Length: 369
Image (cartoon, rainbow, N blue to C red; front, side, top):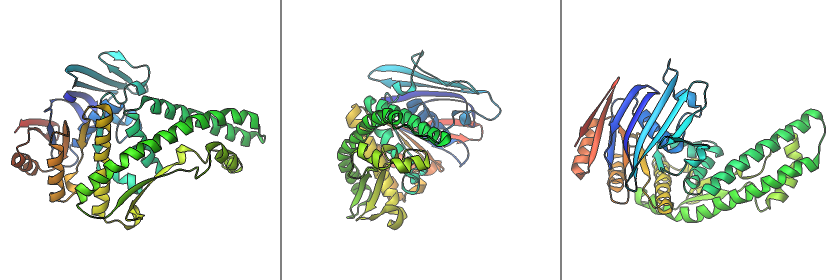
């Protein structure tokens, strides 16, 4: 599977863009602020129905314009598939495959798998538990439709339960029987979510360890652990135990929406004790393991997007990474960089098939090497 062509109108800083891509390595090079990352984000949009960076869709419309349009043509299994996304301000987002609109955007997730490596990945270490849950859920949702449906259903029930707890507080009354109706559903979906996450990690962690040792070349032991907010309790027991606290704060305080991933090196917190180099290696290993896991489950090579990776690694590690992703185990790759000469030299030395796009203020020029 690979992206043959991308076209866009009024997406972020681009009035328009149209490009034909190599099925192996594609590079967007130019100075900072020119919009290289925005092109990667457009590709991400076509895979996930949303931006990697902006939670509000309207923020992706070019300033002073009323809409944006993204269109991509993927080749998959010998078939060319058209994916379309359009958004007008204050209107519903429209997403289509081969001109047929989706009833639910979740139907699209996983059809064109993608992994993005970005400086924003540092949020996995330094950010809240929500960032780590999104990472976990994003991987599983690309290959397990049932999990995505259970996750959506769990979020819906959780919203209803929280609204009920707030309502009880506002009216100064409590109805345990009504709450139990939502509790039963929350428990049913929550157990499925937790079990799927735990089973996923049993397979994912060995892949992660392999990549960490490859990238770091060190003997330290990297680890990730699923931190379950239920502890050793069953979900139902945990809900009963936490009820007084839930009523006091007017929302649900235990469940998979509160779970986390714990990162460590040699038993010590990655965030508190690891060097910057160790943290970068850890994050890169996470994302490459994500790629490998999805490839095995989907029996296809996901698109790999590398945003500003060179500036986050030393030259030796970047060269090693480039050698890895240009091999047969990987498919189509998109890279951003600020130095055309540097990326051309690396690609020429390795004799890697590629296409380079020079991104400047209001112009993009493609070259094939």
